[in-house]
Length: 201
Figure 1 (cartoon, helix red, strand yellow):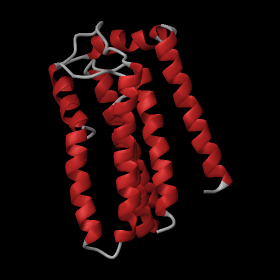
Figure 2 (cartoon, one colour):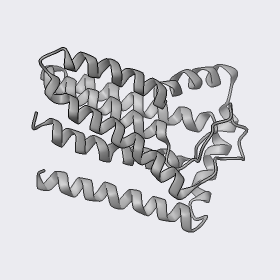
Figure 3 (spheres, rainbow, N blue to C red):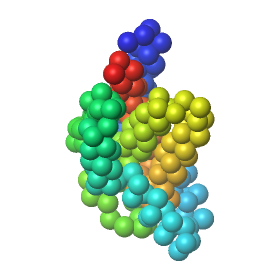
Figure 4 (tube, one colour):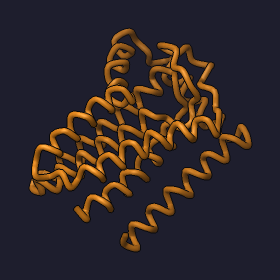
């Protein structure tokens, strides 16, 4: 791992740890989180809810597992099977760490904005946000390695997907902004680890 990668990894770990401590130790983040409920309550619409429900599925653990299974099979059957380990490490590392942190932090989900549906489990960090960065980020990394002339398009698509999925969680009223940010950071952490391993493939 290069020095730059270690520094980025360390910064992500520290930032995530600070967010987790703030959530567990005080209500200091509530003032920064509550604005989202007010804002999204004012722009909700039936069409927006339906669109958000469809977008949020792209970051769900179930959909992610199906997509990962298909891609893993494609890698095994291709000459790019060397990327399989780093791909699985990125996805399952992100998923496992999300569930561990949810149980450690035990933050209840937002209650001020009527949620579009009942989401089980705790709120921090957002699993959908973490999966969106880890899964689609690694896919972009893999495609950039295979088709380097189209790097900007792969990266742009991954960023757009991650942002859309994170916003959909806020729009649906099932997460605080800090949950989504923490999910992005956690997913980014595992994406960086996966990329480091993948570059050795």
